[in-house]
Structure formats: C-alpha cells, structure tokens
Length: 348
Image 1 (cartoon, rainbow, N blue to C red):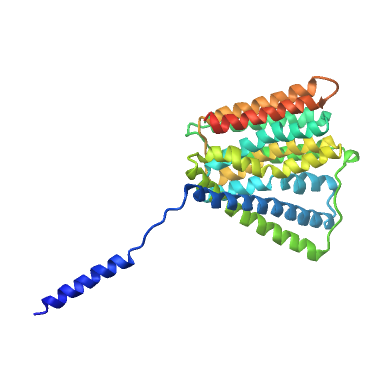
Image 2 (cartoon, rainbow, N blue to C red):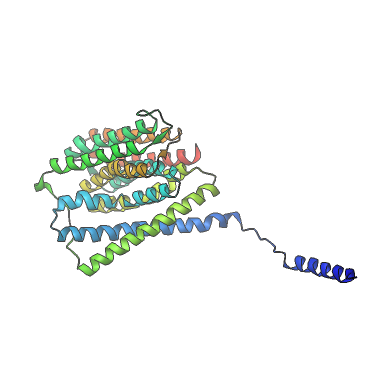
C-alpha cells in the first residue's frame, strides 16, 4: 500500500547521497614534503636553542657548586654540543625508527672532520696539540673501529645490529675516555673561558626552556624525518647521514668557526675530536640500550669514508710545517665533504 511513498523516499535518499558526496582535492606533491621540511627545520632550531640554554643553565649550576673549569668543560660543555644528536637518536629509537641513529652519528662525525675542520682551517690554520695527537685522535680511531666491528656482528652471531650489551661497552669506553682526559690534563693548562654564575631565577629559566626546547625539537625532528624519508623514497639511514646529521652538527660548526675567527685553533679541533668520540661512545651507547640499532650493509661504505677522513686528518697534521692543518689542506677536507654528500645522495 505504501509502495509509492517508498519509491519517493528512496529517490530522496539517492539525491541526498549525491549532494553530500565529498569531492577529494589531492594536494600537490610538493606540499606533502614542504610542511614536514619546515617543521623539521623548526625542530632543529628548537634543538640548538634548547641545547644552548641547557648548557648555560647547567654551567651556572656547576659554578655555584664550585666545580673546576676543567670538569665543567669536560662534562657540561662537551656534552652540550652532542645534545642534538643524543636527543634525535633517543626520540627516534623510542618511536621505532632506530635506522636514523647510526646514520646520524656516521654523518655527523664525517661532517665534523671534513667540513667543520676544513672550514675552520681555511679561516685560520689549525695547530694540533701533542695531547690530541697522542690521545684524542687514536681514541677516535678506536671508537670508529668499535662500531664497525659491532655493526658487522664481529662480537656476536646476531644480525647486523648494535645491541644493549655492546651499548654498555660503548658507555664504559666513554667514561674511561673522560677519566683518562681528566687524569692526563694539566690544571695549569686550563684555558676554558667559563661564564659567571647567573642569578638563580635566570638559571632555572634556562634549564626549563632548555629541556622544553630539546623535547619539542626531538619530537619535530624524529617525526618529520620519517615523513620526509617516505616522501623522498629514501631509507632512514640515508636521511640520518645527510639531512639530520648536517643539522645536528650545527653547534659544533658554529663553535669551531667562532674559535677559528678568534684564532683559537685548540678549541676548534678539540671540539671536533671530543664531539666525535662522545657521539660514538655516549650517544650510540645510550641509543642501543633503548633498542637494538639495525645496520644496513651499504652503510659500510660510509664507515670507510669516515675512516679515510680520520687518516687524511692525521696525514695533514704530520705533513708540512709543524703540527698544523693548513688552509689548502682545509680546502681539500671541505671538498671531501662535498664528495661524501654526493656519494650518499646520488650513488646509493
């Protein structure tokens, strides 16, 4: 009896369905990467500012606690330039993207030697101390060799990973290096220019903003690096080697350039060598304790480039007059970094 009304009701439903049907407007492909890229840059800015605030606040606390300039320099200031790498790696591991971790450290250490030392020595020739030749450069070789053996299952029959046991070994080696540095250092040679203690109000604000900046920066970098890796068709290791490593090494770059402009070559090379050692022992050590770090076999090529960079740096130190890296040698190092980036992005 109600069939005419049923047909009318069905017709109305069909018309309504057609009216409310959404029309999807696909975004241009460029927009898919533009927003994550901008957020990634914002994350790096937050990381660098956060690390600077935290170091200033922690240094102020150290001065108030009457710690020596040596201890402050070896702990707070030394760790400060490695904080961006540490935060990015920790967040990436927690969020299930450990592939960024090893690439970030290999890329950062390669950039430290080739680009940062290269640019710094172009500005002002770098005079390398005997302490660095006897202690820091050899320890840098040992650190690079250690992760090479660990990543290629030399110490275990497991897949190509750095596991938590190896992470503990790396941390112990890092603490041993810091202890050796303190024992072998002559207090009369302390040249750290330590700031005066800030008022407690500014100190607390610096610590709070520093921690907040590191947290926000870590979130933005780890999330958007994953998105860009997918959008650009790159694996996480390559993103870590290039984009992430370049940005997290900015504190070392700025510190070394400022030191070179002031003709203080000791700080320039000490900053690079110390950062490289702490990146491997401390940053990778903590990261591998959080989760096993996968290692892609193709990354061995980048490790060999890192070894070559260490050897080249050592050769430059012992060639020419004195224990110096000259301007033309710095130019060769800088060109080497251009070649490293080209190889990592184009030849993979």
